[in-house]
Length: 481
Image (tube, rainbow, N blue to C red):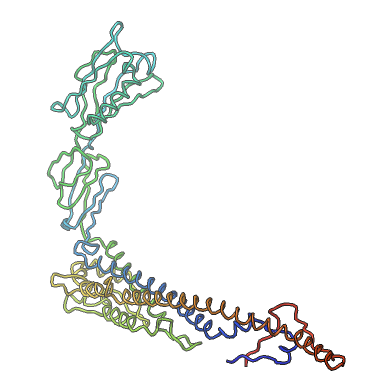
C-alpha cells in the first residue's frame, strides 16, 4: 500500500500528520511483528497442552509400573481376623495363603512402680529428719536388668517434683528407659515411675531405698502370652512379626480360651484399586489425544495439535497396547476377559463386579495376565513401551516440548530484533517528516512574502494568499493509496 497526500491541503499550510505518516510507512513491519507475536502466543498455548499431556502420560506409566511390579498391589496379600477386638493382622508379599488359629491369653504390659501418698504434698523433703542425703536404686528389665542409682541430695532432688525431674533427665541422658511423674489425687501426691518398654524388658523393681518414700510392689512388665496353631508363644510386645511368616499380629485384648481365626489371602481391594487407577490414567491420556484429533463440526477443524505426527504415533501405540493379549492362562487373555471393556472412543470401562469375581476365582492367573516370569504379560509389554514414550530425551511428548521451546526462543529473538528495528525507524522517520512538515507549514507565509515583494516592485496591491489553519506541527492527514 502506498501513501498519497492532498496537495491543495498541504499547500494551504495544513502540513502533515507526522505520526500517521510514520505509522503508515511502518505498517508492513508492525504487521510482521503482530504475526510473530501471534505465533508465540500459539506456541505458548501448545506448550501448556503438551506439558499437561506429558504429566498424564507419566501418570499412566506409574500406574502400569504398579501392575508390573512383582511385589506390587497384584501380589499383595491381606490378613483378616474373625475377631478384630481381640486380634488384628497384616501380611506382606512373603506370606503364604492359609488360615491360622490363635488364642490370646494375656497382653504385654509396661512396668510401673509407685509410692504411697506423701504427707505434705509434692514439694516437701522425702529425706528422713536430720539427713541431707539418701539413695534409691531402680532395676529395669527384671532380675538380670541393670540397676540405676538415684542419689538424693537435700535442696536438689529431695521432693517428689524435683525427684521426678531428676529421673527424667538422667533417663534421657543415660537411656534408662523410664519416665517419672507426680500423680496427685484425693489421697495426696505420689511418685510414679513407668517403663518405656513393654514385657519383661520393661519390668521395674526398687532394690534400695533410704528415703521416707514407701514404694508399692511393682506391677506390669510381663510378656504377652498366646498360642498360634497350638504352639505357645511369649512376646515382650503386642506386635508380633515372628509367629507366622510374612504376617504381623497385633494383639488388642486378652481372651483366654477364645480362638481367633486369621485368614491370609490375595488382597482383592488393593488389586481392584490398582486396576482402577490404571484405567483412569489410561483414559486421561486417550481423552487428551481425542481432544486434538476430533473434528469440530462447526469449524471442521481439529485441535491446535491435530497435525502433530508424534501425537498420532503416541495415540496409535497406546491404543495398540490396550488390545494386547496372551494365550492360555485359564482364559484370562485380554482386558475384556477380566471385565475391562473398550469404548468407541478408545477409552476403557471397568465392570467392577466381573473384575472382583475374576480376581477372587483365580488370583494367580489374574496376576499372570499382567506380569509373568517370561516378561510377556500385559503390564510387561505396556511398561516397556512407556519407557520409550516417556524417555526424557527421546519420548514423543518430550521431543515436542523441546522443539516448542526452541521455536519460542527463536521467535523471542526475532520479535525483540524487530521491535528494536521499528523503534529505530520510528525515530528516524519522525525526525525526517517533522522537517518536511515544518517546511510545508511555512509555505503560506513564504508565498505571502514573495507576493508582497512582487507587488511592491510592480506597484500593485497583492492578492490574498492562502493562510494556514494549522495550529500544531503534526496536523494534516496522510492517506493510504
